[in-house]
Amino acid sequence: MRRALPNQSGTRWRAFRNIADAARRILELEGDPYSALFFRVYVDPNPLTGKTADDEILSRLEYQTEKGFYLLERTVS
Image (cartoon, rainbow, N blue to C red; front, side, top):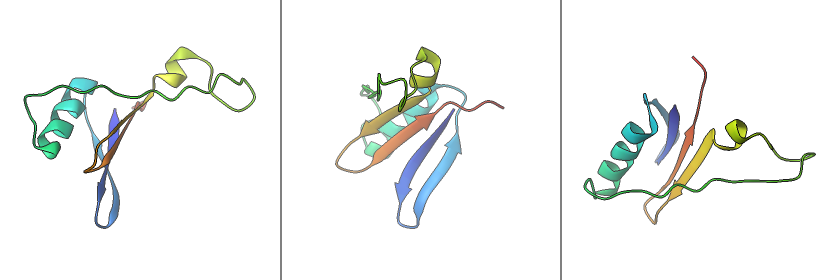
């Protein structure tokens, strides 16, 4: 699992073992470590332009606040 964090020099990637670990880090960066997150999932149902398999769709999770945009992508090691 990876996630991107915006910073002054561009995008940083960091590896996490699972979604909970990545969410915990996002909450720390947002200054609210005892809260919870709702991730967005982008779905394009058009088979010609989008991914239609559930595992492909769920391999990309997004979270956005006024402070930043966070992207989690599943990777195969």
